[in-house]
Length: 583
Image (cartoon, rainbow, N blue to C red; front, side, top):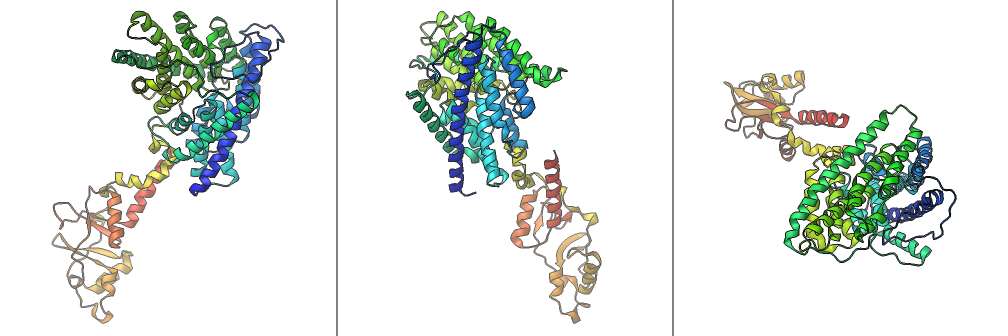
């Protein structure tokens, strides 16, 4: 695809992603007003930079708050498992799986089902985030657009990444971080570099569309940041060890979050009951936790704002860490629909808040602004749990405006990323592009560098040779009998030359019976060595326009070890290609 066309399609994906982000934002707010406020009389706080589209609140019933997430769970379960089972759980993993294993194909109905069920899950108090749904919504449209234009798989995958970038960049108001998240989240230690520019275009486009729609409906221009924070910075180099400690704690709680989530997920998978009702059980358990720890309900961004504002006690913050981890595990691990990135933002903020306020009490002259630790905790937890360190830093800066904290953000996020190792909340991530089925065919030529000549050559004992004293006519008959068009010439056990069909043809027909091989053979040999790789051997064959290489030791060009031809290289290539594709 030409760059111009790719840019055009990236803009289209960005427009639809921005519309989808706005639709999801509005739907979550409507569901929250209906379920939590209308049925349970509970109004969760909003983050400082979030706007309310629907102002009025309606009381319908007075149900116990612990029951509301179960109601949302049963509704979500029925819709998901009836219409699109792949929409269960956290949508980002489904997108990653589609990219690596399904050629980037996402069924058109999935984004619609995901939007509805995620809004119901989050709006009813289930502990989940909106990044999974919006990632799947944007990616689903990118996939559908590629199918509409009959684009190849590579271009479809790029548009899927564009959809993720547009969705994340708009709904989190983080166009730079959203684009980097989209190219980073696919791997544990790599990036989808070809998609960076299209992702930037899509993310910025979606962000503009989202902000414009919010301004149109509310009459107020949204702030650039989701969370309203004071101007924070690192006040002393003595704070850096504390930020390092925060990185260690973020890694610990990140691993706890991952283990808790997948233990719960596996338990619900083995539960011998209909899938449709599992999210209701998970919602009920999350609701019970939320009854005692309200910070665990819904997305929880309003409670992050409360921690930033200093309106939550330290013991409540610590309790909320464990409550949010469990509530998220029950909500999404049971099959409920929503994202796991949003809860990561909240949990990380709580971890950072606990560290900041505790050390502020202990060392008030060093830790002057505990709010800074909340932001750093957010980034370091995301870096460790999601394996997206660069996106975590950028998104935290964009969501909060904490630019002065960059040294602390980099230190803490790096420590957390390293200490969590291969643990990740996104189990469909692969380590690098080399391990991705989407890129295996691209890596095959490079894999020739890993195969040695000795592993592909025909060994000397199986090679047909001729003597310098044989006649050209004898060689011609040998060619007719064996089908080979080139033969090493060996005298007294030593390699002295090579003769080919081209050499034989140059001899007049009447002279072939009396002309010796030694008179027409080539003595200036192009050879290969047993420890040489196949890519290098192939280059020699192509550059010299020959069909075979004689294999000799590096220290003795007269000792024939074997012969390697284009056919032998092709066979080795085909063998490793088949093995990789089938694995």
